[in-house]
Image (cartoon, rainbow, N blue to C red; front, side, top):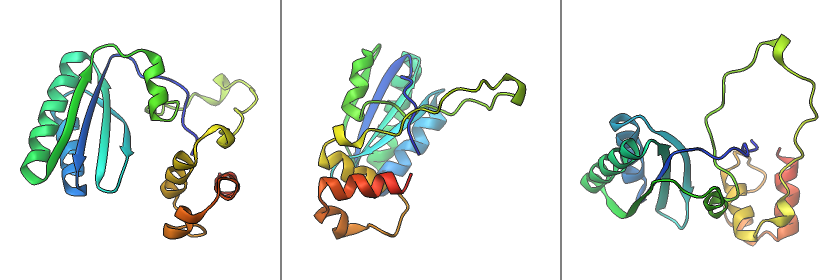
Length: 163
């Protein structure tokens, strides 16, 4: 699935946890504690998951605090931070765009005939980013060690074929 190019507005909250149970518990607590949107979960190295939430600054701060407290009960919090009004270029750190909520579908009469957006340009991404994208795909053609051993050209071909 291609990600939208929109950048969420408001504050950005980051909470990095160690362990899957801590990550799930943190996400659940953050979303229940305040009116925030979980726009991305970034896996960095094995076991580390960074949650990105957006919303009003006070809500994001409350959500990050609640998520950190919940994660500490079952695992480990590595880092947490809230950026009140991040510059839009901050999103490039996370692969160029943010995963924003999908807006409701427009009525058929309101849909304009526009050219579809071009496919993601995988050539500009690093091999590490391509490997992460390949791991995120639910496709049995390339898994585990095969992803780790694949060249950039092989990863690009796989990602384009699985769109």
